Image (cartoon, rainbow over all chains, first blue to last red; front, side, top):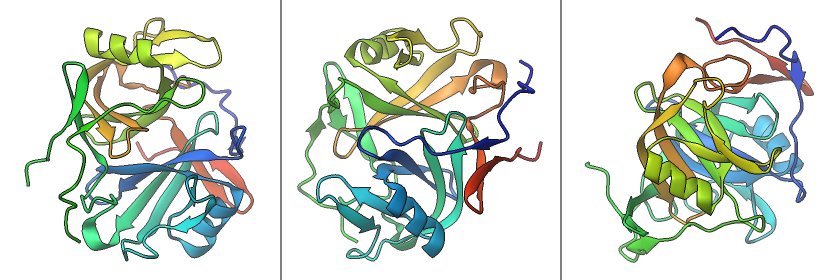
Amino acid sequence: MMIDPNTPTTMSPRWNADGLIPAIAQDASTGEVLMMAWMNAESLALTLAEQRAVYWSRSRSEVWRKGETSGNVQELVGISLDCDGDTLLLKVHQIGGAACHTGRKHCFFYRPLGDSWILEEEPS
Amino acid sequence: MMIDPNTPTTMSPRWNADGLIPAIAQDASTGEVLMMAWMNAESLALTLAEQRAVYWSRSRSEVWRKGETSGNVQELVGISLDCDGDTLLLKVHQIGGAACHTGRKHCFFYRPLGDSWILEEEPS
């Protein structure tokens, strides 16, 4: 497949109807996908300014500096916007080794089984 | 950080107001995050049944069997649902080596520079 020579040279974040964009956090060293959360313009600006992941908490409707209470800060290693501007990918250094509020390394631990999704731990 | 012993043992997908859930596709062998797209209940069921990524195209309002026209099928290697049920992570085998509609391996190729985001190729 050829690379499209007409790919736009610049892109802007495309906020959804709520002014948010999904942000995927990936461990910069292991490549593991840690979590997905949301950012608004303010939290994205703070992420870039402070070089750490700052999300928008949809449940609390407030800026959420990841790790502010838990200590599990995500230091920013890199950030990119996707081809149509509607998703961010953060590469982070996960302080404390746990991205998930349950204390797990990452948030993706339910596997499909029949009609449900069951808790399945990664081999440690 | 301790792992929460009260983590629910089962989880269900939490669809948004449009009946959709974000689905991250990660290359199962390289760990690279390839793209993010959306699924509805039908496309998730088809993904599980056909063991390939089937998304919901928001622009075309139709089931989107990834690679159906381009040939760049994503064979399903694994799938998981996150801690609060609102994001899916797919590990895939990317046929054709290009997940992005621009012909690139993945979709995340804009980097922040000042107030804009500029096209930046990965070193090949």
